[in-house]
Length: 494
Image 1: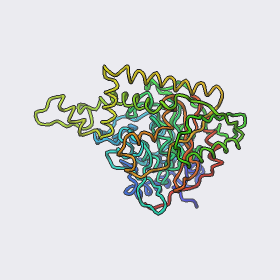
Image 2 (image 1 turned 120 degrees about the vertical axis):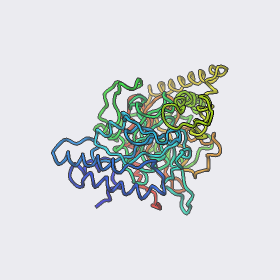
Image 3 (image 1 turned 45 degrees about the horizontal axis):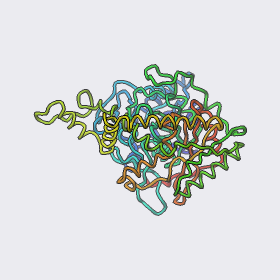
Image 4 (image 1 turned 90 degrees about the vertical axis):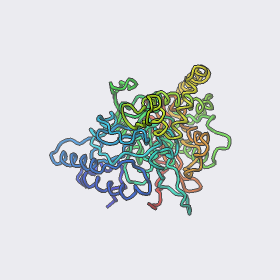
């Protein structure tokens, strides 16, 4: 019999429904896997084995009673510790929120529990989702399950959803939630050899999700393959009146509409993404992807996204600006950490609390954001960045008049060693160079594994679609998946 922890969402859900195993057996197996791997990988901030077992017991009882089961019934998942979970600590991987226990449930997690999923625990991440390597967490680095051959140097699992990507890649969770502000689902998925999708901005509710940059943040799914991502995204998505940015649109049946047939479709290849000095393995995997989509019946069209070169600086003005506003709520007054030196006044408490609670990267981005929003620089930086953002979005609109989806690499390299890039913030920010444009435009985008580089580490390909066309993104991704036949897994060392 196949090991239960090797199975994904579809196989687990269907196996429970058919009686091949119970939901309790599934939860027990994954709880044990989490416990065994946690000391080495540090993928979770908090583990909740009892929550997984409680959800499993409800599913088993419903099945025994002949009641209909949800689309995620019997599937225990990891929940990124950015989603508020009632009665379970939610920290955003920051000391300033350590010990904060929400008395409410985020809309996304509530939808997943209603669909029958259980919670294995709260997954580690870059603090307040600010990072590309999971090195900024106040609760320690997440370690990728992947290693270079004959090398024990710990590798980054990507970020900010590094705990999510590591847990799925290590098979200690069949799926996990992620959030994507500038690539934080797609980049870690690429670095760990899993699939991850960021839907159209507004497709999943942001209510109950700790905010980083409100005009960019979007929840999404991370799982073994395209089908599992489609199943999970269907359960997560939907209109939420509590979120003013939520799309008041029905959720399509993406899983039922999956098709790898690309005949009659046009795939855009933007010339601006062919960067000088591009990693040859990344360039090769991109060429492979082009050939695979052509084999699936697609017509390949060269396109231009002329403002792409401005995307990264634009993002690193807008995102910190919004962060500086959002994080002003952490003041030591209402919840979370409070540092009140003897004889201190209110302003002193604010300063002491934030100095003790925020990490260096969070402070850096708050300072950048405060600077670009200040009276003397607002028009020069923030207003200008918003104008360029409009031009970037217009580039995509123009391109999609001629093509159905766009194919680009997900990340500029495979996984790098912890500490290799963190000393230079600018080098770390460059990890988002391929993922940021779609985020600025609010478009759906997905990363799927495309193969291995010369060091035996995963590389991802990214499919970008039109607004609201998650189906097109999923279908092109499925065509890539079927042809890539990616089956590599990290050799177990933990």
